[in-house]
Amino acid sequence: MPDRDRFILSKGHCSAALYATLAEAGFIPRQMLREYMRPLSLLNGHPDRNKVPGVEANTGPLGHGLPIAAGAAKAAKITGASWRTFVLTGDGELQEGSNWEAAMAAAQFRLDNLTVIVDRNRLQQGDGTESTVSLEPLAERWWAFGFSVREVDGHDLDALIPMLRSVPFEAGRPNCVIAHTHKGRGVCRSWKTA
Image (cartoon, rainbow, N blue to C red):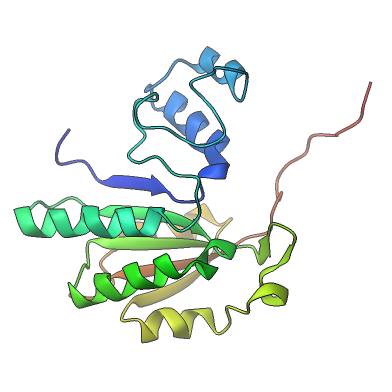
């Protein structure tokens, strides 16, 4: 479907959620999910577009998804296509300079067909984001980089879905949705050893 919207999971280490979504949408059989992270499985820890249908870009190295998404959005503008590009980043990943270079380019090229969704859980490997390199004031930073910014409870689908459907927020400005989340919320599994 050449006119489909694009979704890039920049925080590729969250591949289990992407694979479950692809199975639900019929891109891969549900029973294939049992192979997740097994040796030689197609469903490894980082999504691979050459192995899994429905994956738009290989991700995992943090900071790669937004530059890829900006390129995809620019390609749509050049060709006059109407599809949009959405990219999900982690907040810790925003400490990678490549994200801010891509953000500057997105604003320069007026990519209002690009939406960055920031999973704002304030955690990264090893520590909290604010203890490592502070991101606050995050909304104001994105605004200063030329984005139209909205904040939302990332767990509230009744708020999140209409927000994503309403992009672009402003003509000529890329979009940023800061989704405030709590890591592990809603997970009810007990991790007891047998």
